Length: 287
Figure 1 (tube, helix red, strand yellow):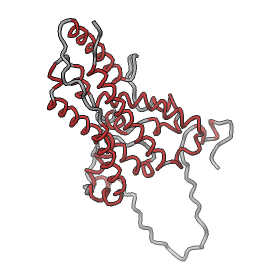
Figure 2 (figure 1 turned 180 degrees about the vertical axis):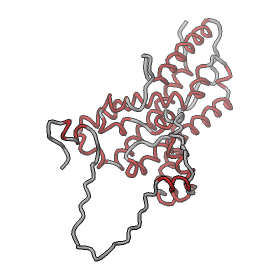
Figure 3 (figure 1 turned 30 degrees about the vertical axis):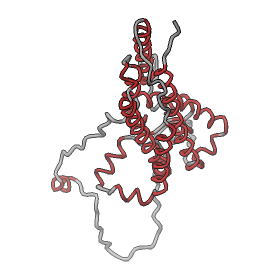
């Protein structure tokens, strides 16, 4: 008996489309922010694109996890047109979210200099800025978002196995494949077989700090910053009692006519070792 796994093959085709979405978004990110990576060199840029596949895998498993599950469940219901339509809608929603998040950094990276995490959403909420402001400023990215989403819907691989059924040994094989793919998806989401899962800092270690943002993708960055709560504000003094202890605003009334001499302020950029001559054999990188 020949082994038939049409829905697994169909899943593979649809995941290839998902990888294509991430690849297109990375290409757009690179084109719009070329000046930030121009000095990295051709080899570094190619390495960033290649290593980006690793980070894309983790994001794809998380975003399309329900789509993957609906493909690997050994049910004859998978052949039903409404079942397949549901998968297509879920896939398109996942693709829309993927494209939207990645396009945020196509425009915003020039300001932030890094991939945006959940702090961007929290910051915009705190500032009470209308989303329409960004839609107006980056209207061309909205056009790209709608166009790419439309292309996903059009080129979504269709199910051509409406008459397929799995019985007997075929069912046992599909259960085994489901378990195998479940384990594969688990490690794909973690991005690692080791004790520590893949994280955003690994991009700099793998591809280099200068192309870390090109290696990452925004959905991955968002997911890995969800648990960040920031630093809690501490209020040990009221404003009135603090001013009584120390008031940084000084209003000095000159006693007489000033002599007109210059005042020079020396500002130390950092107290790191490389900037302090005492710790650097009398030499300092401060110029």
